[in-house]
Length: 280
Image (tube, rainbow, N blue to C red):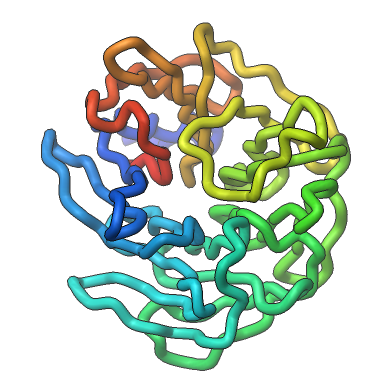
C-alpha cells in the first residue's frame, strides 16, 4: 500500500444544500431571524425592533442587543440575557458569533470589544481596544475581529492575540462589513458612493459587495455577472455571492481563487430578506 503524498490536494468541500439564515422586519413583533433548510422555514429568533442582531454559523442560535442595552441569546427554545449595560438603540452595534457558534463578541463602550460564552457561563473577557465597533465580523481562525467606526470613515482590524487594532487600508467611507476571510485578511464590505449615503448603520437587506484586502487596500473584483446584492465567506474559504433575480435570488459559490463552483436558487420568500448565514 502506498502512503498518500503530503502534497495531495485536500478533498473538496461538499456542495451547499441552500440552507441559510435570513432576517426580515415582521411588523409589531420586530425583526425575525428564520432558517431555511430542506425546503422548510423555521424561526430562529424574534429579536425586537432594533437591528442589532447576528445569527450563529450553525444556523441554530441568535444574539442581539436590545433597546435597553442587554445582550440576549436565543438557543434551544430559550432566551437568556448574558450581558447588561451595553449601548442599545444604535443600529450598527451588532454582536458577532465565533466560527464554532459557542461565543459572542460585542462592543462595550466606544472602543472596547469583549467576548462571552453563549451559554452564559464564565465572565466576559476583553479581546482588545478598537475604534472599529460597528458591524463586527470575526475570522474563522479566531484571530481577528473587525468593525468600522461610528463615523463610518475607517475600518479597524483587531488582533485578538495581541489585543491591538490597526486601520485597514483602502477605506475612506464604509457602510457595511459582512464577513472576514478565514485568515482575517480580507473583508466583504460595502463602500458608499459619497458620505451623503452613509445611512444609520442598520443591517442592509441588500448591498453591493466589495472584497477588500485590509493589509494592502487592494479591492478584488468579483467575477460574477448580474446585480450583486451581497456576499459572505464560509469558514472553509469559499465565497458565496448573492445575485438579484426577478422571481428569486441566486447564490453563486466561488472557491478561494474566484472560480465558480456552484449555483443555488434561493427560495422566492427570501427575495427581499437580508442574508445572514449560508449553512455548510
